[in-house]
Every structure is written in C-alpha cells, then in structure tokens.
Length: 566
Image 1 (cartoon, rainbow, N blue to C red):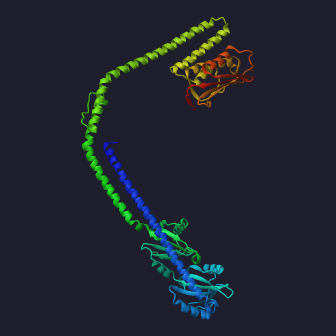
Image 2 (image 1 turned 90 degrees about the vertical axis):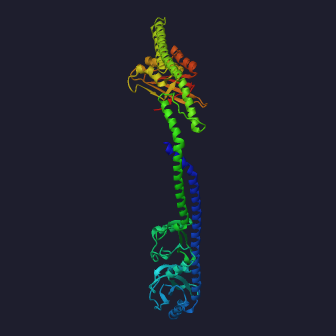
C-alpha cells in the first residue's frame, strides 16, 4: 500500500464516525416516520370502516321503519310501488328500492315494474339474508331493474309470525359512496379502496384508472391479505403502481365480507427525510474531498520527504553499505526515528566482523560434529565386530555362538537406525521392518498395522532387541519357518486415564507349525521380558497357542509421540 493510499485511508477512517452518526440519525428518523405513517394509515382505515359502519347502521334503521309500512309488510304491489317512489326521492345516493318475496320474485320497486318482472333468487346477498334473517350488504352488480351499477343493502321483512317473508332492498350508487368517503377527512395523498366479498372494487379514491367494478389484481389482493393477517400496515404497490403504506380493516356485522384499505404514499411521507439525506450525502462527499486534498498536500510537505530519506538509507543498508546514514535529526517523530535507525546501523557496522567470525566458527563446529558422529558410528561398529568375533570363539557351541552373533547384528542395525537421525529416535515401523524385511516373501505373508510413531532411542534399542528375538523364534519354530505361515504386528497409542499415553503392540503368528508351551524359559524369553520391564517399565505377555505364538507388549510413553495417520 502506497503512502498516498494510506493517507486517504486515514482520512476515510476519520470520517467513519461522522458517517456512522449520519446513518444512525437517518435510520432513527426513518423508523420514527415509518411508525407515524403506519399509525396514521391504520387510524384512517379504522375511521373509514367506522364511517361505513355508521352508514350501514343508519340504513338499517331506515329500512327497519320502512319495513313496518303495511304495503311493504303485506307485500301489496300497487300500494308498495307508489310508496317506494315517494321515499326514494328523499334518499341521497339511492338508485332503487325493491321488495322481493321469499322466493326472490319481484313484488314491487321504485321504478314501477310489474310484479314478477325478474327474480333475485340467485343473488348471494338474497340467499345469505334469507338464511341468516339479518341485514346483509350485497356485491357490486348491475341492477336487473335499474340497469345501472348498484350495491344492495338487504333487510329481511317479517310477517306476523316473525318469520322472513321477503326482503326490502336498498340499492345505492357506488360513486355516491366514493364521494362520501372522499370527504371523510383523510390526508390529501391518501388512497381509499373498498371491495365487496367477491373481491370487486366498489370504491377507489382517487380512481385514476377506473377500477370501480373491476376485480382487484391478485398481487394487490395478496398484499391486503398480508396486511390483514399481520394486523398492521405494510408497504405495497397501489393499484396505480405507487408504493404506499397500506392498512386494512374488514368490518363485521352487516358489512361482513367488505374490505377497507387506506394507503399513504411513501414518497410523500418521506420526502423531507429523503431531501435531508441527499443534502447530508453531498456535504459528506464534499467534506471528504476537501479533507483528502488537504491531507495529500500536507503529506507531500511533511511526510514524504523524510520517508524518502529513510527509504534511501534502508536501500543502502540492504546492499551492505552499513556506513550510510539517513541524516534526520530533531525532536519530531521522524527525527527520532532517523536517529534510532542511524544508531542501529552504526551498531550493526561495529559488530559485522564479529558476526561473520561467529558464523565461521559455527560452521566449523558443525563440520566437526558431523565428523565426530561418523567416527563414533565407525568405532561402535568396530567394537561390535570385535564382540562378534569373540562370540564365535565362545565355548557355548556353534548354535549359541550364532544366536549371540545375531543379537549383536540386530543391535548394530538398530544403532544404524538411530545414527541416521543423530540419535534423536526412529520410527517403530522402521524398527520392525529392520528385522522382518529379510523374511518377507509376498505381500500378504506378513502385515504391519498401526500409526506412524517416532520412538526415543532407549525405546528403539529395547523394542529392536525384542523384535529380533520374536523374529528369530518365528523363523525357526513359528509362522516364518514355512510358506503357509502368516505374521501380523498391530500397534496403537492409548490414553491411560491419568494424562499419560501407552503403546500397545500385539505380535500374532498363524499357519505355522503347532506351538506348545515350553517347559522352561530360555535366554530369549528372559531377554524379551527383562528388557521391556527393566528398560521401559512395561509388561510382556507370551501366549503359546496351538495355532501360533501371541505376544502382547504394553509400555508407557514418556513424551507425546509424533503420530501420523495415512
């Protein structure tokens, strides 16, 4: 990252708190405004629903009075027609008054049509009012008598036995209802939508697209259902595509099935906040630009020059010219830094010769160490060769001498393993392969199964001699003495429950000659058990089964081994 980019990054970092404060304030303002607009939408939706409820209540009272007139109660067509004509002139928004019998046949209407001229038995409001016996508001329909769009308010007519004998129906103009709601004291930008139970729009203010009489779109209906389910206002597109915060109320009683929605335009509600946000963003941008320009100019004058001098001196030091100096002085940070670097260069120059001499001495000591290790290895082999020669001349006989010689050779091979890694240890798998590889004749003749584990030197020596004795015994009397024999060595590392680790090894032979329990313990057995117990504080269990020898070895591990699974 260049110095210029670092300066710009610092300026931007310094502006982060201001941006954070601006963002927090805007978020708080928007949250508060959204809560206020939501509450306003819900309040206005309830007000419109309450106005419709009062309208329905007044209509019910009016029809309750009219239903008591003898011409209507007794369903006398002649008197009924003149009576309805005289009444309808006095009712605002009324399009038609109808009296229908219990079968839905026309008895009379305010238009003077003959009895039985048409039937309304198939109308949903008729069926619902006759079935429930309570007033019901109907859907948006084109009247069969008036031939104009109307919404019907049906009121049951009861006979002397208090049974529903027909309906008194008041058909009013949806446009008149929309005009009534337009003057209900709503905000100027509010949109009011009222639908009947079938989803047909009966009121839409403002009705810019002539939605009255049309079924509301599926997306709009889904938004209203979501708002009704949540019981709160939701943001959704209106019928004209403008996003509004819309609240929904669904009245009950006589208005059951109607939906009232009031939406407030989001852009209008948040106009002042959006303007303040734009101003804030512009001011922050201009402030950032001015701050970056000032920082770049100041950085060029006060920072870049001393940095260049430090870089020049560091390049000279990197090339080995420790006599070079930055020349920076003074009590400023750059002056103190230059003086510290110059002092460091002087110290490095003073001790350079000493460091070179020390490196030369270290290299010489490493070469001497390698020479000494090779010499030690040579001397140990010579000593073991001498022991081997003496063993051949021993009085124990040829067989005893051969056994002694094999043990010395095994010890020598184990020393070779340790010498390869400067006597730091050797892998357990390599120790076993060191003894078993001369007897491996096929891939499935013997198997070694276990994790890769590195052992300390004394473990390598003790387990190496143990593996030699077991291998020698198997080659003479056990699984390795014939082609049908099989040998498996399985090991694992376990926890002992006290924070330590243990190495468990199982030597198992199968397929060789029949094995019998020896009558006495030979030197090899004593060497195995004594070496493991004495050197490693472990235990050995020899089980001379008929199918083959089985040996279990359990030793503690002093330090955590290196285990690698493949």
